[in-house]
Length: 139
Image 1 (tube, rainbow, N blue to C red):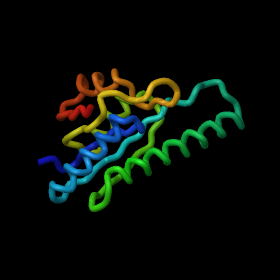
Image 2 (image 1 turned 90 degrees about the vertical axis):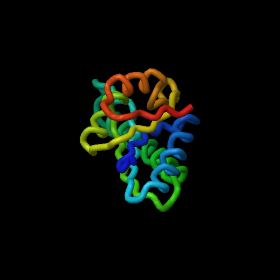
Image 3 (image 1 turned 30 degrees about the horizontal axis):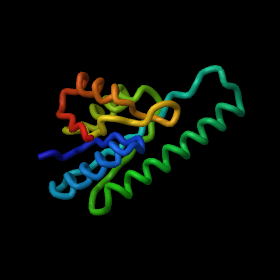
Image 4 (image 1 turned 90 degrees about the horizontal axis):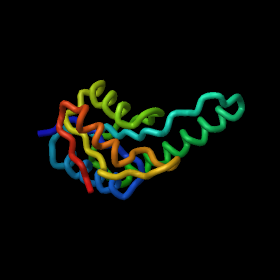
């Protein structure tokens, strides 16, 4: 049914459940693949070197840890590609979905807030309103 499933992951409980569900869906559908996306806040402007370089390194490391956590939750026997992005979450998710020709988006209904957060509850509303493909909202 769904051949290319985008999973938006931010480390929240809801996104963990979404990753588990997306992994299970991909396992039961032959030849399906997952596109795992983590979106971090955009880098603040006005920081000079070495501060911006340190921030980029730290946030990239944080994002890579989250991608690895999501891969572990998804489990084996599933083809998974991943993208770590910086910017507005809903727009970034939609860009990847379009560019990768996904036919389903799976994401949690609530994300983490503040600087630790990558997706907030309003982000799923934006994705749903922008998307031309089905969006599975996981609680």
